[in-house]
Length: 81
Image (cartoon, rainbow, N blue to C red; front, side, top):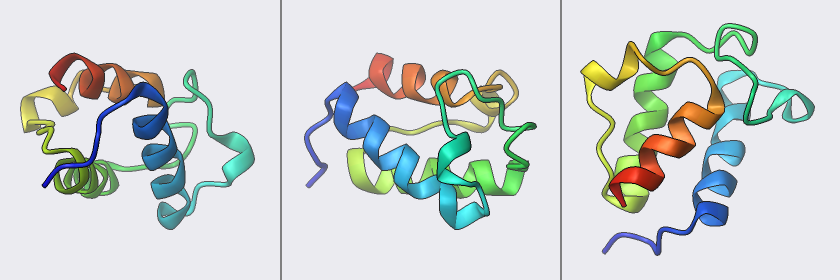
């Protein structure tokens, strides 16, 4: 069963997941770009899987090309939940 989707819960999940890709917690903000955070497309795919597993929200490959910032991911999840 998917976890309850609230903006706060989603943000917490994403912010907690990013350090496993080598991101410093202090660098994570809604406006931070994945390029700045040195998060590559494979890392983004893994992040998408974490979100799908926890919330049942799919971030498709087509979405990935439009995702530039942490906020973009949060907005996509919010729009689909």
